[in-house]
Amino acid sequence: MTERILIIGGSANDFGRETESDAASYQVVNGLVKRGHQIVIADDNPYGFTTEREEIKVIETQLTAPNLVKVIVEEHITAIVASVGGLTAVRLSAEILQILGNDAPKVLGMTLPVMQAAQNTKYLQERLTQLKLPAVQTRLASNVSEAFDAARDFDFPVVVRSVAPVGQTIRLQVEDAEELEGAAETALNRSLTHQVNVDKSIRGYQEIAMVVVRDRIDTTLLIGGVEDMDPVGIHSADSIAITPVQTLPDPMFQTLRNAAFTVARGFNVQGLLEVRFAVNPANEEFVITRVTPYFDRTSAMVVTATGYPLVPVITGLMVGESLTSVRIPSIYADHTALLEPTMDHIVIRFPVFAFGELETAGIKTENRLDTVQKSVGATIGVGRSVEEALEKAIRAAHFNNRNFSPTLMNALTDNEIVEQLIHPRDNRILVLLEALRRGIPLMNWQN
Image (cartoon, rainbow, N blue to C red; front, side, top):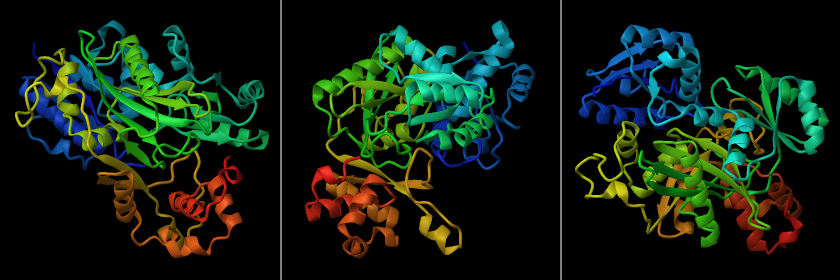
């Protein structure tokens, strides 16, 4: 059956929302057009690569639910693709389903519960409890007073994040009552529902992401696992990410893999799902912190690292094909879609920071890293070892950055080394290497 499909665009590029959305959209259009579907794209970004295609209809409009409902009615839309438009597309799709009810077009590959869970950690916690999976303790707050009530229950530190945020998710680490009021007001103002989640802090836990796919007959595959070198407490975009996972023992890795499959089944996902975990390094207990049912920087990294045709595969899964029958480009071997990728190399994504350029322009900066993203992009290093991949990624990201100079590291005192390890900055990897070179005892700088 031919569908008239609306693809909700990823909007303009921004921090946390780079060109991976546009690249994925282009591939999705390829797959859907080859299957005979008619495509309409709605976006407010006039410079998108995908919107230059001639065989599709492009509607440039502000991305709001009323505007998209109008497009759906006027264009006789029968299905929506939200998996390449980031969190904005997911939020808008959920709003459309609630506005139009039974008259709403189907959202390919996603259910309303997974869309709600991607936006609201309190709802995610409730669903994970039903699935008998561990989640972060969280409380919903509609004003500053309720945020204080939640913080008193959990004790500081806590993390405040917006529900249904405008743009990308904002997460604010709050250390004490003095910081809470400002953080709560900021997060409330960024929420379309004027609500925030107050989460019990799990700072210091190890962050692991599992990217999985699932088809309509419940076949599931792990496409890749990504490990953050930095612990919880540093924004994932600012963390040094590595694939395949290096430090988890295999039984723990398999536990997380199976948990990710359980989440995909529990939300009845047909296509892509990224499940993010936080693992306590002391006892290997874990919680699930986030579900991401759309293509983002982690998915893009896994595709780059493995070569797996992720976007062509999920395009087929969204329209009801199984992993055994999904059509992928002919350059891939038979049954590629059904095989979990294995890697014989290491890939590292290293964040790019622009503190030096900003300071040169007279702009005061704070290069201490926390839960608010401060990187402006990333580079990729590929090697046969962690050391080789890391050296390549650092050189590409910060070849002319004075903060990454070994000479600067030599000039630091031991006390300065320890202070910068406890309160990490953009160059913390070189500080760590210097601490190891000097033989500074681990107990002196563990946070």
